[in-house]
Length: 95
Image (cartoon, rainbow, N blue to C red; front, side, top):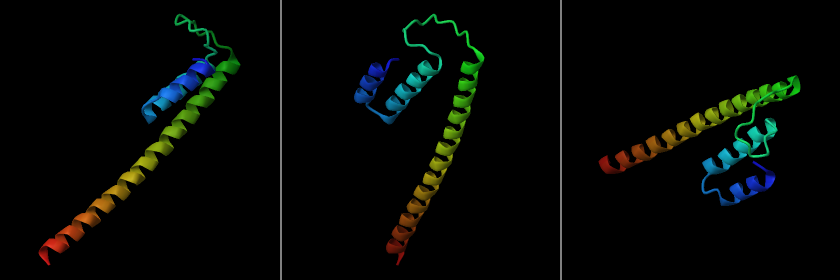
């Protein structure tokens, strides 16, 4: 995916998932030096390319962990809000 293709994909993305997928595809293509659209590309990697892929894999794993932890925290907040609203409703109904 070229930079221009990425810009178009981001412009017309309908959801955050579409944007994330476009960014991930662009990053992978950049990491693999895969810009010619040839789907039969053979991945012959030198040590530097392997090191870059390993570093990005670790970065992706760290990002996934942080995102998951943030989502767990958000869910806890939403649960607390819902329980509070329910308690208020019960109090109002039975007072």
